[in-house]
Length: 242
Image (cartoon, rainbow, N blue to C red; front, side):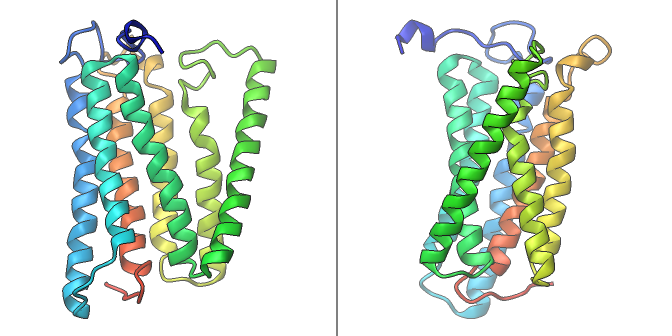
């Protein structure tokens, strides 16, 4: 992509009124929620590490914590620079975390073998792609022209994630897994979060600040809950913390 195209301004959120760096202060600052989620996860991780006398640590969980914090950095860049290049800085960390966490949840939280985890992971990815394809065709058939190009302010891409999350919560519930409450809580928070992301542009006339900042704040909590499930019940030797 040409450099000039990468520098093109992006204005798709209610709070932004011009192309200046600090035109979305609330949207930018609320990205701290992702950093706090990662720090909360590391605090519990470190606590369990000391409790178990584990000097080696768990690199797989540490990577997940790092990726969670990186979401906040990337989103901050997008809501300050608001250009095409920074949109990649926003999207890439998000989907990297999602892809990584999905595998780690299957492998560590469910507790399958590595080979079985890869099989389930592959099947899940195919299902997600199929759902996205189906939604895309449906939206094209209905000629959706709302902000974001999908009639939902760009939120369609997250719908397969909701389905997968509730499916994962159901599996854990059937297994009576100790992490089931954390995952269900995460799914419920994410559902509310997507609602606020979707209505952001629709409420501009009555609420100029918009609701995208609530998407950030709730997503920080959502990521935090996912990390708690992983840190508490996805370690090499799971230890429950009340």
